Structure formats: C-alpha cells, structure tokens
Image (tube, rainbow, N blue to C red; front, side, top):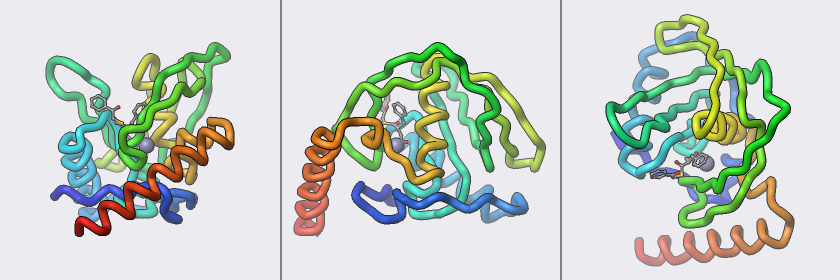
Length: 171
Ligand code: K1U
Ligand code: ZN
C-alpha cells in the first residue's frame, strides 16, 4: 500500500521518533508499505515519520542499475563516523524539487535490528552513507535544510508552504 508522504513544514517531521519494541506483523507491514512508497515516489530512502509513523524505522535502496537491494533498518544506531567528509547534493521526498549541497562523514558504521529481530551491523560508503545519515536524521526530527543557512532554509520553507496551499486548493 502506498502511503501519503508528509510535506515540510509539518510538526511530525520535527519530532524525535520512538524506538520499536518487538518486531510484529504491524512493523513488517509498515516496512513493506514504506518500500512500496519509496519505489513509487521514486526515491532512494524513506523514514517512518515521512509517512506519519513516529517509530524508528527506515528503508533505502541506493542501487541505480541492476537488481534492487531493498534494506529495512529498525532502531538504527550510528556506531562510528569517518573523519573524512563528503558533499552530496541532497533532495528529500518531504521537500519536493529542492536540492542543496550537504557535507557529511563519507563513511559510517551502523547497527540495527532487521525484520527477523536479528542484530545487524554494516559499514556504509558513497551514496549509501549519505542516504543512511539523511534517513537517521529524519528519525531525530532533522531535515537536510537544517544544515543550510537561515535565509536559504526560510526560502525553501516558504516555497513548501506555497506548494501545500496549492495542493490543498486542488483537493
Ligand atoms: O528521505 C527522503 O526524503 C528520500 C530521499 C533520500 C536522499 C536523497 C539524496 C541524498 C540523501 C538522501 C530521496 O530519495 S530524494 C529523491 C532521490 O534522491 C532520487 C529519486 C530518483 C532517482 C534517484 C534519486
Ligand atoms: Zn528526506
């Protein structure tokens, strides 16, 4: 099931999400819906608060060509970040058609729980590293525009307010 994606500004996109307790069928259904929503958008990642669910769940697939590599991370924790940084022009499905350079650690090691309830750990680099950090930020109520200066952030926020007004009028 494709779920509607919240558009900034929305108070749910500014809140810290709650950890998931047990991996239940409800969590598995949420993850399946999030992957379907992400591929439909299309996007390379999606975090649960973007579909209005305030739980620490994210999905991603940064494979551009070849077979898909869907990943579901429950309760992700960043264990280590590299000293070297990288800049990537980021977008966000909650801030459509706006892009900006964001500087982040080039590599990160993340621990999480998978949908079988098993603990996983992996070191991410390249676009995977950028994406997993962007998605974990969502779980902490942080958006990529929070890394920009106040003027640029305000300009993007005003554009999104206008977009939401137009969409509401269209029905
Ligand atoms: O979390 C999100 O809003 C999804 C976002 C993830 C992301 C993009 C770029 C850098 C870091 C994290 C997106 O997927 S925006 C759309 C996008 O990047 C894309 C869409 C189609 C093809 C390829 C990429
Ligand atoms: Zn985003």
